Length: 264
Image (cartoon, rainbow, N blue to C red; front, side, top):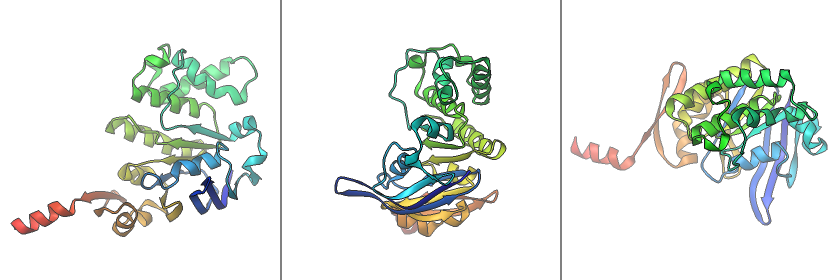
């Protein structure tokens, strides 16, 4: 399994979104893509899964240019879970998740497909929702069901656009830990977009920090999530401490700091 991105560029008409993106991932791991809104995170994901066609450079999966794959063949290698689903499926949860088995099946689902679905529902602790109607679920439940649909696809690469959106803190941690364990135990390359620096720092093997359509920094969480990088990319002040071997970011409000120093 390999993902190679070389000199990738993408533009909407005359507006450049991505410039000279280079990224090589050669083994299963959990990678978090971080950065402010509008820096091209989702566009990068969409160029990897062929939703968008790059205007420059190339994306190669297993040394084959993404554009050369049929959509069905690409779906056997790359799964995608969007930020949030606006789809209102008049289907049960189990039937919604079964849709993820489409690249591997012909016309009918098999007993093996159902077993894989229930395994994933159990892993995400949503077995009790199996016979519920998808369009009656809460936003957080929607997110877990869509994650389950991506996981049963059994891709070599799983792309996720903010998979913990709409989840509370406990479930954010649980889901991200599941993704990390999934990448390590089942040899899946998992690439997720996140806005939560601390959860990304706690569980990611590698972090890609984007800024202004380029990769600003890439490496381990400790290498990338520094006070200097956070200040430059997010334009906020922070204090970074190491907790259990991982960086933990404490955001600072300069105005509050100034007021505190004045009072002291």
